[in-house]
Image (cartoon, rainbow, N blue to C red; front, side, top):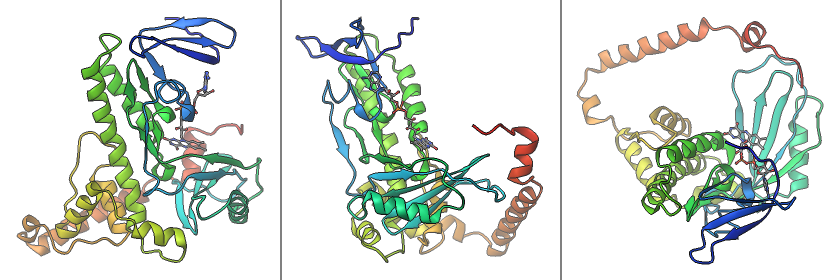
Amino acid sequence: MTRIDGRIASVAQSPEDGTIRSVTLEDGREIAGDFFIDCSGFRGLLIEQTLKAGYTDWSRWLPCDRAVALPCASDAPKRAYTQAVALEAGWRFRIPLQHRIGNGYVYSSAFLDADNAETRLRGLLEGEALKEANHLRFLAGHGTRNWAANCVSVGLASGFIEPLESTSIYLIQAAITKLTELWPAHARDAPAARAFNRQMDLQYERIRDFIILHYQATQRDDSPLWRAVRETPPPDSLAERIALFREKGVVQDYREGLFQHPSWIAVLLGQHVTPARAHPLVAAEDPVRLRAGLQRMRDAIRRAADSLPTQDAYIARYCAAEAV
Ligand SMILES: Cc1cc2nc3c(=O)[nH]c(=O)nc-3n(C[C@H](O)[C@H](O)[C@H](O)COP(=O)(O)OP(=O)(O)OC[C@H]3O[C@@H](n4cnc5c(N)ncnc54)[C@H](O)[C@@H]3O)c2cc1C
């Protein structure tokens, strides 16, 4: 295997069937290939700019399309979790790292401009800002075909769902695993392309539904963004999942998809979506026995949590690092 480092200046396609024939680097070297993997980020240099495989826009459900990120100093004891907190035009994240806190405001440009988003975020910092603010733009959605002709897109070139549950690296891994399994036998392996696209569509759609749930089920109605997202009808697949849960507490697991029932239940109950009745098989159980079983689980979780070191103690013992 040969690794060639360089910037792609142009892409050549076969005049017969449009497949990608070669890429030419800025220094003039031409690299021909049978099959190409597009990892060029939001540019989608091969999949979109060259093959025009299309983009499915989900912004009607996920209107956040901007983010501003700004790390700050902190002396406070570290929390062992990231926080996502709703704000007027989106939500903010707080990620505690060893030597700083990563902060950001993910918002919708239809309801807030970049200057006001940065001012709002600066007002929430717990310590001195450590860098200039980094402003990012994106459009929620994914490539209509992640495998088109003799090219597969991976990572941001294949799509982006806002980072409320940090799913991008998972989707990169899922695409690599699927591509390895379906590795093309020749440049135009149509059955492999169809299988890859169907399975990556499912991965994306299921993550999309889980993220939309956070907005759909919100009780917040104190700003235009939150009123708009509450009032937008969800995709049918999500409406069905919510209805199943409301009816009798059922959350169905699936094979192609990141979030399983513990995640769905946490967000459904956390957003006050409650089942109307117990599942018939649960309702047939003795309630005293059920309650005792749940209490035992609660006690075991509490004992385990109480026995763990604090985040600061854990880091000091196992993985303390120099500031970078
Ligand atoms: C602040 C922040 C926090 C994040 N946190 C998380 C997280 O907690 N969990 C998670 O899953 N994801 C997270 N993400 C998202 C994740 O980091 C990205 O999804 C991932 O890095 C994308 O990788 P990528 O290779 O697809 O795209 P990129 O990292 O954008 O890489 C694209 C590459 O293509 C190159 N390129 C572009 N054009 C050309 C050209 N013409 N020729 C040659 N090369 C070219 C670029 O130089 C670049 O190196 C975060 C992102 C940010 C910004």
